[in-house]
Image (cartoon, rainbow, N blue to C red; front, side, top):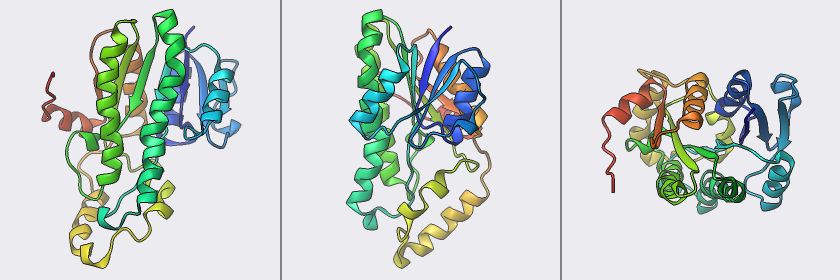
Length: 252
């Protein structure tokens, strides 16, 4: 029986991913900044553990509580949509603390056990904003692009120890709490001068041609965690798959 630790399980992709792994027989360590036992089924194979990926003490406590694991899914993330010109640098740093440095810190915390056992997999959840430029998402894109480069390089480092590293790239998920969770962070980020530019973009968001569901992401994460090949990227959702097919990734 394998064990997975998943970050950001209080809603959206993380919650559905925890359910998916559990349904497929894994032991699941579902982590949340504010733990809620009622979100997931009661089971001997499922534990809810508090975790704030921006706090080293919280990371140490969560990984100690989890014990040995076979897979780490770095899903926790925060969003911001707005004009870069008026985005406070404090907000930029807040986004990077979770989306970039939090992923790196969690990965660093579990690598010693993976390396010692010469087994294990790290799955980093990024976004389809890494597949094509998207307006009003410069800060968010930067935080996720950093993880794309980090993951690709790390995969080469850890291949020597038979540790796998994967990327899952979800498309646009309007049913998640991305917008509501970042509402306060995004206030005032569309100044009047940019309104004519932003209006048609938000209109397009309201009527997408294709969307990504929580199940799309959970299934892609599960495939990535169990994939024995050298495949690095796993787009999730029909919109992300379409983008990935038109995107060229150099091999070096």
